[in-house]
Length: 353
Image (cartoon, rainbow, N blue to C red; front, side):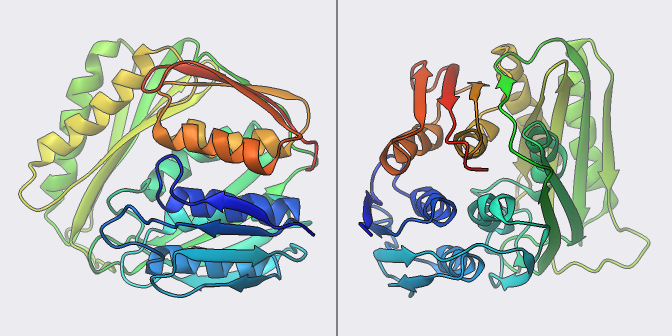
C-alpha cells in the first residue's frame, strides 16, 4: 500500500500536524510518513509529549511505528486494526493530557465497543486546552456527533511537576451524525469552574469573582464555582490554578480559559478567560477558537454534510483543513472566511463511522 507523505512543517508546523496525521491514518487504515516534524521549533523533533502520543496511537491501532524516539524529525505509521478495551499511558511530569487525548480520541470513536483510557501527566498546563474545557465544552459538542465522552478527573497536574491523572471512556452510539453548528443562537447562561491547588482558597475565589464581574454585562445568569482544598487534604503536587468559563447557547457551548502563573494576579486570570469567551460570543458563531479545529475530523469520518461555524480561523484550524485534503481527498471540505476571522466549514463526510 502506498505510504502517504505529510510535511510536518506545514501550517502551524507543531505537534498538531503529527497528532492529526497519525490519528487520521490510524482510523483510515493507511500508512503515513510525517517528516520535518517541528523543524522550526527551538527544540526540533519529537519531545516526550509527542512521543507518548505516537506510542499511544501505535498501541491502540495495533500498528508499527518507525522513528519513534526523542528528537526524531520523521515518523512512519503502519496502522493495524483498532480495537476497544482498556489502555494506560503515562506522559511523565507535566506533559499535556488533553493533547494526547486529542490524538487518540478519533481512534476511541472508531473502535467497536467502549474504550477506557487512563492517562497521567498535566491536566492544566500552558499551550494546551485545560481538562475542564474537555469536561464542560468538548463533551457536549461531541454528543451532537453521537459520541459519548465520560471523563473522570482523578487528580490535577500543573506545570512543572505534573502528577495529574484522568480516566476517559468513549463510546459511539451507532453511526456518527452530521451536525449543523454554524450559529450559536440565543445566549442562555454562563457557567464556570475556577480552581487552585496547593494555594490559598482566595486564589480560586478571586479568579471566579473577576470573571463573573467581566461577564455580568451579558444580561444572563452567571454561575462560576470555586474549587479549592484549603482546610482539607490536597492530593495534588501543585501549586497551580486556572479557570474555564463556558456559555450555553440555544445551539452550542463555547468556552474560554486561562491559567495562573507566578506573579500573575488572580484577577487577571479570571478576566482573561472571560475576555476570550466574550470575544468569541460576539462573532455569533457556534464554536469558539479552540473547538472548531478539534471537531473537523469527526465531521470528515461521519456521513452526510456537516457545517461548522468558528469564531476564528486559527492556524490550527487551517492546518487541519489542509491535512484532511491531503489524507482524505474523497471527503469534500470547503471554508468560507479569512485567517483570524469568523469562518464556516462545510464538510461532506466519508461515511466511515
